[in-house]
Image (tube, rainbow, N blue to C red; front, side, top):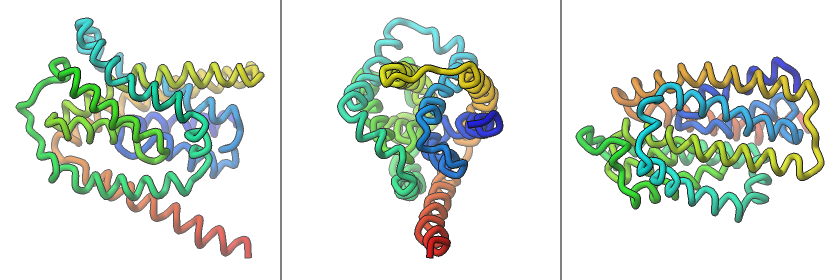
Length: 265
């Protein structure tokens, strides 16, 4: 991976992490395009640069993020399912991360769901704020988030839909998804780094520099993406993201099954 590739992947991460379009799926496709998808450092990079994006949540929601202990306990309850499923299925998840077809299918299916989610769960802006979410609701949202272990599903999309299924407004569900991203992505980063070093890899100075650049770029881009997303979501809903996912997924499938096949004949 060179510095240009690192910046491009970080921009993709910053834009897509908090949108319901799957940041992991987009980075898998981008790294496949660059021919670096199967590189062990690339896999580490795509996880570790999430630290920059979650820092943007802490900065934007500084006053609301540092709330009562009760709020953190609820985040922890929502985080528990990801820990359990992540430990149980980590090997299978790593295998899925190498498959663009999984991403494409997940994008299409998720896109169809986003086209209907506003009809299924009509937004009710009078419902509770994030700090008043119950423990049971937090746990259920955490279960929905686990669907994002399938590349292309979207962590934010799954948790937002989960929140709306529990009668949260679009905005409240999105904000809780942002808060939940902090322990979830921090935990994923720690585990990935541990596995990387356990396998005998040591970061070079150049790789450390790429990680620093990736986190800085991801942080700046995510700041802009979050503010834009909340404003758009409140007014317009999810349909544009649904159409985007379907078009992107079908395009990937077309390229894989027709364009690439033709070039190998």
